[in-house]
Image (cartoon, rainbow, N blue to C red; front, side, top):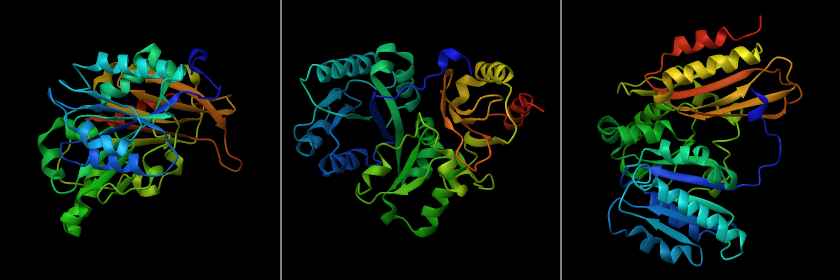
Length: 336
């Protein structure tokens, strides 16, 4: 990638976790559990509710203790109050720098109606936010009882699944094994790179939600193979899906940059997420690619692990993406 996007310095920005999921999926229950647990993390919470009177901040108050909670209501965080989100993040970073409040990470809980893409874009598009914060990951809760119907009926529910770095099933105790397994298969088909975990009444290891490096740092090669298995099938004809591009040949840097920009320009509206590692000719370090719609970022990571042959692994998640066109375009960037 071009030199202007390469940064090898340590990342000291405040990590942010976006917690999303359709209405009633159990986001507040999980967040209360995170706040009560003795894990040593100092968490600030940004709470978004759709409506003039919010109640989640009241529900969280006891669990939060002295931790700061900022409530955003009267709109959806992904649209009408996005400017408020930028203002709140800027204010929190300033107060933290002056010692007025103490926290080392932020969890943003979105309304169940939110499309998470614009929320994630905030951490790329606004310079002040991008300088102070890094998006650690997006965790989506999925209600096992109602998920099939919600995914059939609501674009927001499908966007939340397709965009996730972690998928967390809730209410699995209320469905039979066959229903739970059919839902797992559907979720994997929609988003092959996100591990599917289970939380009972919000009980889930803190490491499954925080410090997952799901968004910025590539973790694809560490995932279980079945998360990337193209053989998964489902019967719901979801418009959101994912596919993986792999190659052991090196990319020509200029051709790859030109091609990825063309693909993003043509299909950016339908590209929810894309990320991966790149093997670039004459570059000793692994390249890391990540993006949201038309917002693209890239950096150099580390040297290839000893004994591991270099290779590219790129994951694309989006709406009705033409896989063969993507594969052919990327193949044309390889050095013979």
